[in-house]
Structure formats: structure tokens, C-alpha cells
Image 1 (cartoon, chains in turn brown, blue, red, yellow):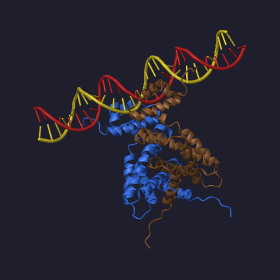
Image 2 (cartoon, chains in turn purple, blue, green, cyan):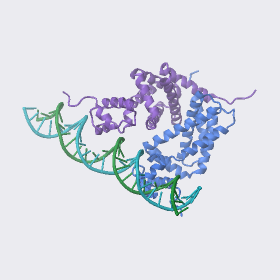
Image 3 (spheres, rainbow over the protein chains, first blue to last red):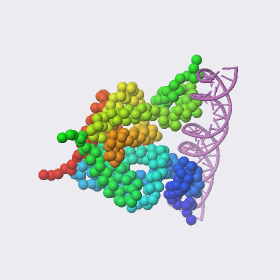
Image 4 (tube, rainbow over the protein chains, first blue to last red):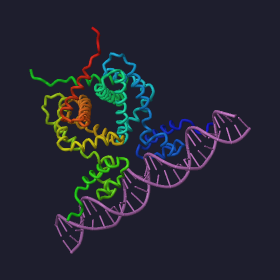
Length: 195
Length: 195
DNA sequence: CTCCTGATGTCAGAATGCGACATCACTCGT
DNA sequence: ACGAGTGATGTCGCATTCTGACATCAGGAG
């Protein structure tokens, strides 16, 4: 018999999600989570730097997926199109990986608690940095890459949000590409001119 | 004689900045800050919701300034241009209000500590929300406003960063307008086509 | 003069997060 | 087969952040 139950990290993540949904984020302590996972508070903090992190373990994989797609994109595609294609692909990957109910529950939690939104935002900022670096590796000039990353992220955020909150959800990729079109519209907008 | 020294809030902010610069953010406790301001830890938390907030008191004024400029912009200007003009004006306002050394020291602190970057990001997200609402008040459709706000914020971030980190600083407004041009370039980029 | 208000202080305590050390089943080399 | 080492976990103690409840007390309103 194994010395410990396996997958302590996974158990902690599940216990945390369950408890957050049951009682809310603020009213569940790390001690509660650890107890439900049959572990110690101290052990929780060995796996997660702080209480928030338990909700963000997936962000590393997401980032890797996106960066890989950027590297694999056709070499003459303009930066923003590279990013949007990568986000669309990663979105589809995520869609297949996670239950929509899970994604929605997590989204609701993060939206509701400023503490968690802060963490989400810094993860996304890290993602922007990673995509920027991936563009630079393709030969995109540094100055362009940073801005493109920021714009691409805006497109992704918008598309993702539309996906999660739409009543009859269609595919993420579609939402993301629609968001890109919207961005193009906003940037191209010219002042109304009487004629 | 007044019962207490005046401007407790201001004293706390100054004490905090000084100590953060002297010993770094992490190694100064709230108790330290309060002591230097001749106040109690408890009083600190009456003025600031948490330790980080002491560095962000200005963001309310900044937001107000920007929103006012948006409201006052010529009615037929396209959303993104409205935003960039407002940011440029607010940037100039900030430039006149604060010592460059202060802005830089604060920027260095925030850049260095993830905790503070998180707070900064959520303040900026709040700013995006406020600018979006201001656009909607001008009659911009909701869907457009949100995206325009996000893009405008990206322009502002880039311009501000360029301003703070450039060795021989020129005016913020110029940097912001330059960032807008860059964004237009990125969005307009077409795939390289042999002909 | 008295009452009230509002800024501050005092105290106790919960929760987060960390360093140091203990435990103990399992594994590997011999 | 056996002893040393490894690695995940537990235990303990502590600093720090943040909150609730109550106390204090100068100055202003009546």
C-alpha cells in the first residue's frame, strides 16, 4: 500500500473548489481545505504559495499551449493574427479539457472576489509577457510584440468572457475570432463627418 | 491647539513611501509605518483597507480626471481617439502634479513586488471600467465601449511606461500618442504577400 | 455646563504564511 | 537482507495582516 493517498495536490484543488462553492471563498479557511483533503494546513502551503493559487494551477498549462501554438504558426502571419489563432486553438483545447460547469463556477468565484480577480489579472499579464516573448522568438520586433500581446490578450479576454457568460454557449474559438473583428472595427473607426 | 496632528492620512502615505524606499516593501510592517507617522497600526487600517492601498490613493483622482476629459471631448470623435486624448491630458495633469522622482520610485516599487502589481492591475481594470462607462454615457454602444476601453488602456500603459523609463523623459502626452500610432500599426498589419 | 461627535487608542483574536525540525514508509546499494 | 538516504507529510512556534468591540477624550452644539 502506498504510504500516502496519491495526488495530494489534486485532492487539495478539489476540496478547495467544493468548499468555495459550498460556503464561499472568504468563509473557507485553508485549514478547512486541508482537513477535507485529509492533509495539514502546512502541507497546503507547500503545494500552493497562498490560498488564491489553488484556483490557478491550470494557468501554466494554458500558457504552454498558447506559446506552442504561436511557435507553430505560419511564418508570414502578422503578429495579431498569430495570437488570435493561438488563443482560439487553446480555447478549443480548454473547452475539451474542462467541464463547462467547472469553468463557469470558477469564473463566478473570480468575478466575485477582488482578491481573486487580482490574481487572475496578474496571471493574464504573465500570459501577455509569454506571448510577447513567443512573438519575439518568431522575429517580431520587440516594440511591436509587446503591444500585439496586449491587444491579443484583450481579444482573448473578451472572447472568453462571451463564451462563459453566453446562455447557449457556442465554441470559444468563434467568440474569440468575433472579438478580433470588433477590435479591428474600433481601431479603424473614423470620426463622423458631415457631407 | 488641535487635538491631533492634522492630515493623518497624508502622514501615513509619506511614512509608508519613505520606509518602502529605505528598507523595501516587504520588510516594513504596517506597525512600522504607523509608528513613523505617530499613529497606531489600527489607525492605519482605518484609512487604508490593507497595506497595499497606501500606495494607490491617487488612482481615484486620476480616474476622475480621465472621465471628465472623456465627457468633455468633441461629440463626433471616435471612441479610441476620445480615450487617447483623455489619457494624454490626464498624463499631463499627473506630470504637473507629481514629482518625477516620486513617480519613478513608486513605479519601481510596484514593478518589483507581485503583490503591488496585482493591485495596480486591478486599479487599471477599474479605470477601464470607468472609461467604458464614460464612453457609454456619450452614446457609444456598449459592446464597442468595453473593447475601446481595453485598447485605450493598453495605449496608456505603454505610453506611461515609456515615459517613466525613458532616460531623458519627454512629455507623457507625446508618448501616449506615439503608442496609439503603434497600436494602429499592429492592428493594420497585413500578412506578407509575394507579388 | 453638559452632551455628543469623531478621530484615535487598546485589546483580543482569527487567518495567512513561513522556518525549523520530526517522522516514517519506501528504495537503493551492497 | 539490512542500513542509509529520500521525500512527502506532520508538528510547533511565530510574525504579520486585518477585524471587531470597546475605551478615551478634546472640542463644538445646544
